[in-house]
Image (cartoon, rainbow, N blue to C red; front, side, top):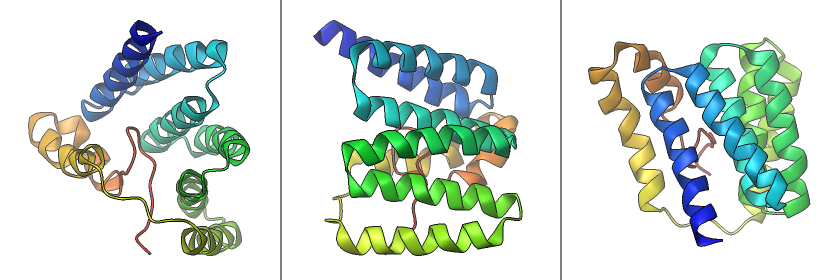
Length: 168
């Protein structure tokens, strides 16, 4: 089991590396491979994270319909796990995607739900991983020109993928 967890962590990290380099197809392949392993193991918490990462990758590519599909799947899983912070992150992802698609009523509803969830949740302490993810895309943009657009869109990253959130 520890080897499997190490393998899963490695696949997720490869997906993040591909995101920073603007290699969307490779990131999607990495996340989807890890997702299948998580589903086989019945790990719903990581399944929700990976679905969110896949949705975030489609979001960064500008494929908002696909992003909505994966974010909605992530929300379904995360509501089963019942972690209010993860639910709020996913609802925010959905709201941001709806905003990009011009669906303003859904966006406002999402933002209001995020505020409600954040008020009812214990605030999560900042982790070194989250801090690293917030700074990393900026550095990557200087090395890989394809990451410049991702830098702007990923500045609120708070999870090992692109789980966007707003401060409350």
